[in-house]
Image 1 (tube, rainbow, N blue to C red):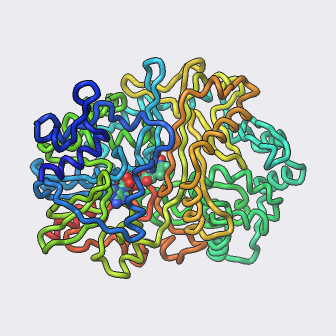
Image 2 (tube, helix red, strand yellow):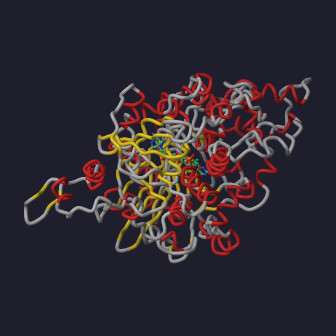
Image 3 (cartoon, protein in one colour):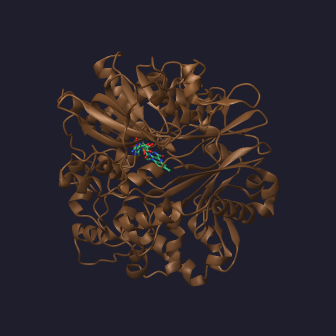
Length: 638
Ligand SMILES: Cc1cc2nc3c(=O)[nH]c(=O)nc-3n(C[C@H](O)[C@H](O)[C@H](O)COP(=O)(O)OP(=O)(O)OC[C@H]3O[C@@H](n4cnc5c(N)ncnc54)[C@H](O)[C@@H]3O)c2cc1C
């Protein structure tokens, strides 16, 4: 048994043991001689500081793809005693499931979390850049606690129990965006020569009156006039139809088609909105329903005299119902909360609670600067263990009291037993891991396609070029990264985002992979394949090219100014949310139990399903709320 455990650890250590100068011995010998502690990670194991291609990094997905393609493994017993719970997936949902399970079953509950990446948090990861002894933080994925007042009770309660205090947070962070405004910095749009025939940075986008902004653009007179008309006209483009009939039309027509075919604007007008919508939907404009844009306040609808949606519509669903919920209700209450590393702060607070000592400190402020001791995550004597680099390939009941979970670590497969399993991984992998669900449930689990998006962070030596250009953020329709910007200006404990333009700062750039002309799901599928085939060098080329072209005139020099690059690619990014252009209206606008998310998430014996996909909502409160539901469902299987 011992050597099996050793194999697992040996992989994580990633090396043979070096003893005296030049001499190495095999791990087996080392264990026999009591030299090797199988629970020790290399001292420099610290994934947040890794640069290059991160997110779904190399080594994290290959086993899952082999499993999808039919490979099977012979698993050896990992040598662990039986657990009360095994959690598949160490994202916010999996960590929350462990938290809720321990709350219900007491501090003695033995829990193992298996995660295929080299770090915990799922999408909620952080990037740490270090320069001249100072840390610069950015979110590698999940950005913010959006619309906190809408959080379901389980999620809001969890945040509170973890020590996230909104009042204290906003005492220090009210100016996270206005600090840039006070420096005179505005939004901007960059028109590139390949797309628009002329290269120009226009300052004031989103801040100055629209007419003033548009008159400065290099767009033709026809495009400018059409864009102004789209904003100003109060025309009823559907005379004779009732409010409901108009809504129905807008639900089944893309915003692109509405602007070009109904309002009859030049196609280039559409490009003005591409950037902001991509960040939410990750599809080309042809897959975004016009009604969503109306609800989110985009122009062109004022003359239609539509009745507003009821404040009750989807009121109890988690966040991320963009375009399907009552805007007034959605925007009421506290503003969004950003931590310097995004929602990785929530993941770290969860791990602090689950594995005592692993994340030193005791407050939401000090967790930001705290260094995780990865070596403590998977110790024999932990009640809760987090095992990284471990891809689960099989979950099956052994009998009506126990489930066996098999995972691959370092090329070898291991098995553990537990009284229950929560699948907090993505819906799309569950049918390949567990073969006990019905065909109907598998079909439902496989319905959604997660969206492929990339969040890139670039540490630059100073941001004087932004200040001299008078901008804090850039929309670049047609650009490889359509969205570029300075991070929110935050202060938590000892950590403060750079406030001195002559000092380094991490710039955020995002890009999206889609395929116009296809359905939303197909756009995501094709885009994902393209993303996975894109090497780091391509991202780097475009980072340097775009920043130089936009900020070069105010002094940016990529050779001198770029200090570090981390490209976080998320081929399986936002959860699929329903869309009336491609899905039945009932799935989109009601909470019918016919929705694939509901059919797919049903518990089977001692195996329950969590994760944001189970709510069809790409949001943190969905991930937490589904963990709470899954853990509660297991109570009834006890
Ligand atoms: C780039 C990006 C930005 C986002 N921004 C926001 C935001 O600002 N606000 C917001 O509320 N939400 C945001 N989201 C949505 C985010 O997905 C959710 O908020 C939440 O973090 C999802 O948590 P989860 O645990 O359900 O899924 P994940 O975070 O995806 O975690 C699931 C984990 O399971 C692992 N896993 C999968 N298969 C296996 C296997 N076979 N074995 C072991 N492990 C496996 C995965 O690798 C992953 O680590 C964002 C998402 C992305 C991609």
